Amino acid sequence: MRNEGEMKMNFKKWFAVAAVAYLTATTSGTALAVPTIDGNASGDGYASLSTQNTNTHFGDASTGDAINGGGGSEIDQVFAKIEGGRLYMVIAGNLQSNFNKLDIYFDSDSNAAVPGGVNQVVAANLPAGVDPYSGGAFEGSNGLIFDAGFTADYFMTFNHGFEKLREGLPSELQFYASTAHYADMTQGTSGAVIAPGMQLAQRGLPQVLRGTTADFDTDGDVDGGEFLTWQRNFGTTSGANRSDGNADGGDDNGTPRDVDGDDFNIWASTFGFNVANASLSDFPFAPQSADEDNSEALLGPTLNGGLPQGFVIDKNYALGAGGCTDNSGTGCLPKEVEFALEIDTINDPGNTYKHRNMDNSALQLEMAWDNSNIAGVDNGDEHAGDFTTPTTFNTSAVTTGIEFSIPLSMIGSPSAGDTIKITAFINGDKHSYASNQFAGDGVLLGNLGGDGSGAFTGDLTGLDLGLIPGNQFVSIVVPGPLSGSAAVPEPGSLALVGLGAMACGLVRRRRIR
Image: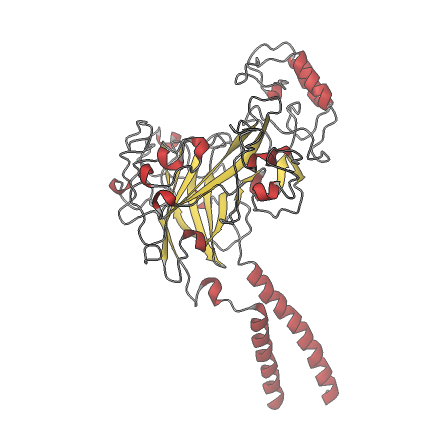
């Protein structure tokens, strides 16, 4: 039989090990409650709010590339959760990198969190300048009528594609960017309008896409293999893509899509390039074909300043860690961050530089794109273009798409028990041609178009979602004190309670021996 001293020593050792194990378990569990902003709902504790039943009439993604999905836009599944005073959402599916829009409207007043709201988008009664480079979000969607009982209070829109900075100038730069816009619809024309920022790579990574058009096999480097590609196709006079040895593009800038000495010169000037060791100032990536670009191979250097994953680049970053010294764009590294600056009223009052005046200090948006999905609904081939027949594909398996997070304070500060309703759908590049991809019960129709019948009219006048069976929105309830994050005590408190219980149990066991 062990003596009293030995038992005490063993108990102390056991208690120390148990304390470490219990603290690890409780703190790890708490950390996992906050989603990783990477464009994927898997493993983050999201609840699925809807799955799609309608095959997409906006084309089908095919390549699996995290940015260049190969064409096509769809909503397969919608996820959401509320944690730490923030709304987290994943709209799983695809958005074509051609500036199609993912438009999202929030109704926060179902329990009087926010008074008012609008059941119909009337541009003249709402703030102007929301996504102005696409013609204005409310101007494009003017006339849209929501489901009965849905009154929109706040708006967000997301898109991505290949932007141009200083377009038409000798210093023109073309680069990939995903951007977002926000508006407060509760204050009439005086509501806040925010362009929070941009990202330059997939999955919210703090990196840029870097490469050169002489990388004909898009594997991230330029070597002898590219020369052989150019040599085999030298003399081609039309229809040549980058994979054929065409390094200088064509069609949209008046340059023939041929393979000639100009393409050789680009190859020779960039021979030896390797994205793995390129600096931020080297070889900005200018794509020729979305079907050929390999985003994974062209994922370039990390941005300066330790920008966390999911955080966006705005003018504050550009004028700080981004290296810009003023709104003229001097010193920006990489040059792309100039896109976020304010208009240079001294040197470029007409804004030919295409500055966007991005500022995330109020919205505190976090976001990430993963456009790699090739599953989910198809483009209607399954039913020969009959979109009224429900899809037979497994849309519930799709978890990647656009992920974002914003503070609840930016959508009216709904409190415990309040219901937030969310209308989300894919729209055209001018916000004026609705697809058939909506969150909620699904439309089981072809593209709703500009007037609800598929005929483009220049805005969404006449498109009444209330005439479509079911709800074209999803809902999430703000958790109360006994559910969600509010029910999770501080890790230290949990550990003390648990360890106290374990110690008491041991004492009781000793007494009955």
